[in-house]
Image 1 (cartoon, chains in turn orange, yellow):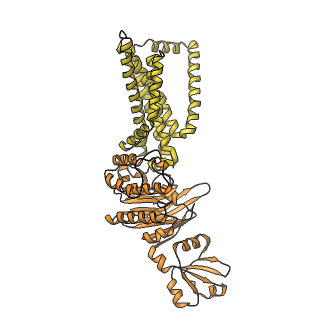
Image 2 (tube, helix red, strand yellow):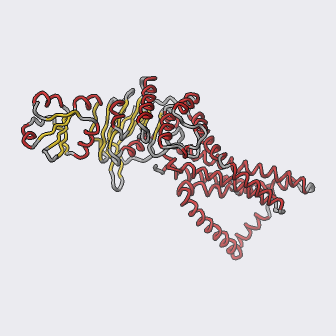
Image 3 (tube, each protein chain N blue to C red):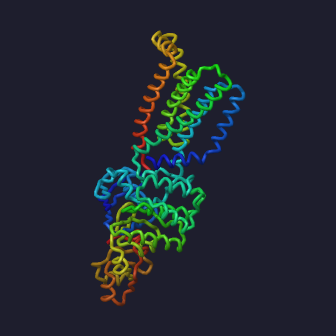
Length: 283
Length: 217
């Protein structure tokens, strides 16, 4: 569905070098700290910036050859851009009806009502949350096969996030081959929602794993200096110096639980893994 | 393309109070005895400015990035801007010609309507030249910088016209060319204006496509 192979983009203070793949029917999460290169990657995929190297294919075609017709099958949410703030929801519906043959106006308006989005108010007068809801509802309103969502839940409260993610889940279940690439700084959203997750730091993909594996198999060992050297280090992935010794990220938590019952071994969430990958040292 | 046109016309309708002001100013000018061809030029110029302002709306709050994820190619976007510009300029020109024509026939029934239409047609066509200049500058430099650059370009153009006019005295060829244009009949002059407008728009569209295809968001 979507593939990036060694995509490079050079800026004066930042270099992107990213590879990732979104397979048909998969929900792929893309996580990283602010400035890690998530939005640059999204812009590269959408051909909004020119890449300096590597290859991006969308629906099997080089991304530079994606036609307007192909774009009808892509739903997009950008964190820092959207429909003109001077338009209303009614205007957006009128525009989308002309642009997307599969646009379902009745469903779109119903969703807007459901999420309390006013029809006649200018978008620039919307709250951040309302704008975020409108962007996501619009992206799901025209039967897109691929959703490219950059921080779609940013600015939403917990309840609205839950509701919208449920809506997104329903949308994906309607047709099996629909795929999503989604970034979020709220790791909880991605943990519950994604089939696999890519982590990016300082412009580079540092980790790719199925979400289930990340949550079930990865763990953090908290060890002092002596324990650290005594442990089998085969499954160490990252380590971080602490006042007590080291925190170590492993992708074989059960191995250490079984063989080193005296060592403090904790389950790790995506945030812990990301923090370790950013602040720690790769082994 | 149609979706983009709908968007631009909806944004245009949002500014309907300005159209009321334009009509009021036009009525005031007619009442104060202003020439109707001047009013046609004024209204058409306003229509042109409104069409170009749609670029500023697209640019607002980094809107370009999202626009180019919609099913519209960069060439399609540029084509739409020109079509929208031609429609806005053309519609305001036509409406003002009709209104002023009716007024002329009421106030000066003896005047030749064909001659009036010809004069206003030429003034309308001539306005496609500034449209052709403004669109690429707006696309390249954005609303704020574009305005400053346009002022500089306008000053340079006037300077150039002044120099050509001065040089015409020294160069007989230029003098003959000016005399030839002045001597053209109404239909021939509107033909020249039409060709000139088409050429200007064509070159401008070519430059605009190049600008937009190079842009990164």
